[in-house]
Image (cartoon, rainbow over all chains, first blue to last red; front, side, top):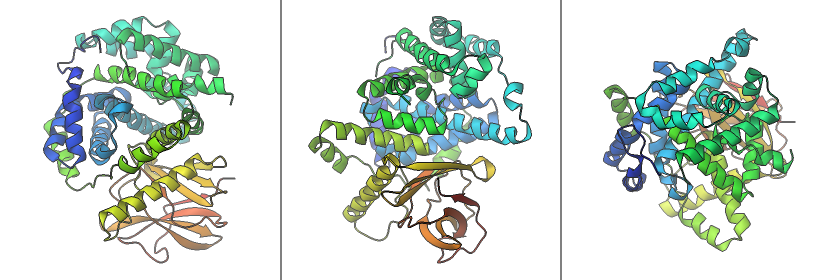
Length: 194
Length: 250
């Protein structure tokens, strides 16, 4: 990665995490505790960003972290860094939780989706208010409005692209393309490689 | 769906913004699409940065809970050794397919591996590993079968179950996500519904709330699949009302 992330922990400490993961894969609980210290805050952050609810976020974070332990023997560095692997899992679990909660709500309220039409500004405001989010903010700004709205609704709200299309009143094909274009810009701006 | 349409789904896929059926279709596409796989990895790296920017300070209780919990959770066996060998020996296309299938399994069950090892008996490790791999292969084969059909149902408490059946292979896989842990000393047991008669199809891993299970035995014309809560070790016949019943996908 070209630039440091302003979160106090440097993701370029990945060689260490990979070594720790190899030890975790052999059942080393101390190494797992070290991996925990390195990623738990981000796992919780992802869950919180998507779920908003503290109790649910902690549940999901716990689930994800235990899953990291359980499936550590399957982790393959060539498929991505430890952090990417874990945060992808965290996002997926958080999104799954949002959808199951929404599905339950939808049984009571057919208009649930409309009621929940997200406030885009709020999403970006929350991202933008923290100093350590400077780089993400800067990069999100390089997206077009529609790209940014689509990406943030999907990432921070856990909406499917169909729900994004509905919320933004855009054709499905447009949203698919904007999600991809948006991530391409974000990828290039953040200077990530995989 | 046309190939170029599938290719454009990399973004939605990386953001977990695809509904289940489209995700499955995309993952099949991913098996043979090198550029999609590369793009998907890069997008995962980009979205991870969005996540890193959300980093919070977790309280000590979470750590205590997690570190306590892992002392009782068994790790999955690695899928490296023989799979690596097979990948080197196999033609490139097949190797990629295997890679993507592993990713597909992980994604389908919402976890980094499959939990098909819950029937371990007191066998030596090599035999167990061979069996596990066999099961994983069979499981992957069902999910990737060209004729695979699936049906998803909401179970209680927001849990979700997906039944994937390949008529050709006459096998079925049950994917669960977000299932509540069974009560102490109990286990979830899977059944084939032979038009009113329940036939055991094995146990689920009680330590995991999300998993992919290769159902034991042939589908053999079963009308559906049921899940019951049974005493540890399972039962010959269901001893409780099913917590879920799914009919076979059309």
